[in-house]
Length: 156
Length: 156
Image (cartoon, rainbow over all chains, first blue to last red; front, side):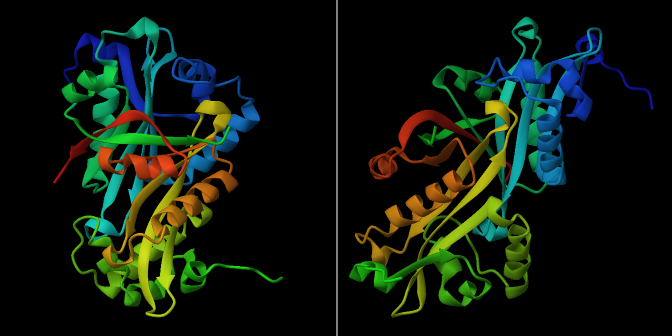
């Protein structure tokens, strides 16, 4: 089937995380988001397999810059199974980040839409995420609305 | 081992959700939280088994009123496996509710502490939840601090 894509879509390929993405700068990208030391191949592979066990219930997506072969954006969503809402499901979006050199290309929006679409296709009645007040306008452009406040308790 | 418990702890037993809790008012309790129609035994059992597959990664706890045999409080936590924070884990607390007839007995605090302790024991570096501004003081008493804002997109 012929697909008409725009130049940005041709140059930036969105797909599921693959185990080989560790060699494509995936961990370095996450470092732009929060604390993440270098991760050994063994530890990476172990975590990759743990997450893979959840199948479609935990999806990590990435955008690869086709020219450089680097991962320039990522985000994850996992599907929580509930009893409320008539045994409904809720999607939780986490760890969305776009490489600082690739801003302004709507890659963040593509990531969030991909993750929200995945949650929808899995039968979720809603998808939620936490963000700073500063990032609120971005998520509003993605169709989200502010609802509650996030509370956190750190153990370390 | 002798355990010295106070009268409230004797009268209200905290434990994991059991499949027989559907007969003890578990679904009716959830209705005080959000939309939840009556759930068939088949649907309940199916969802119970789906969640049970996650083992310690998805814990639902309940408090049973020993005298009445009714479930009067509940809450859940699931453990998200991440790559950030050196392949860290985050606990997500959801669906905390205390029966309107059992308020003022610190049952909500016991539920939240149980869930936070579970996340900690599973190796999480943090535990998070979303709540209304109105419930913020309660969660602050449980050791939580406000961090970000929650954004939501509904599909139904």
